[in-house]
Image 1 (cartoon, rainbow, N blue to C red):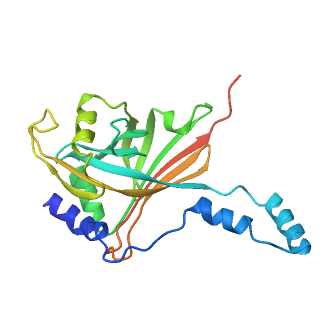
Image 2 (cartoon, rainbow, N blue to C red):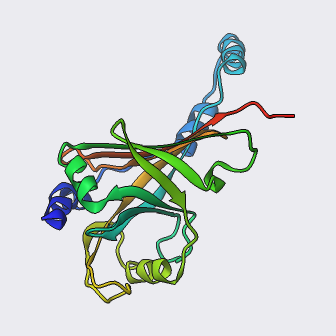
Image 3 (tube, rainbow, N blue to C red):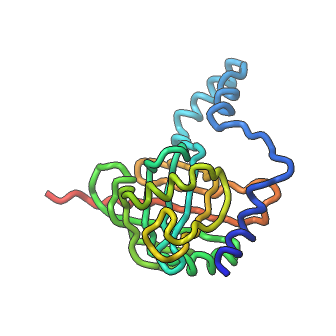
Length: 223
């Protein structure tokens, strides 16, 4: 069953026996920046830094994937699981069964692409062409959290990481059960036209890879 597949892949990831401490990217960068160096090395380092492209910005967010068994999959990004207002909410053109089938292979890469000449923020793009593991699956849409989504998020407030099922009729107005998976994701901002979210696997995870990419190609503005 689909929920059994979700649990088999993800539950071992959520309860590692020996979690390893991690150093935030910003702290690691500060430590390197504050190290003493000789004048010669400082000169060469500053020259290299001026020539190198800016480094991507990295942070950790909470990602929740949910959907009815026969409905579309939703991808929700939050900085605080206690908040019912996600920073990003996307309805993907994938059924739960389709996603589970892709997960059985251990690798899921969902790419959302758009082409425009607008200057609004990447997360404000309303419609995306979607590819799952290289195959076009349709169009994803940015959504505003309605009463149903806010109710679902409030129901899952006590869940830090995990996979499970919300019974039909509970936090949902449909007769179908709602399946969900919540985990920590690494959020990487490459530039104004590219962002990505990568499932963070603890050391003893069986190796599930799941990433969501937002990519915009610029079109020449027409006069």
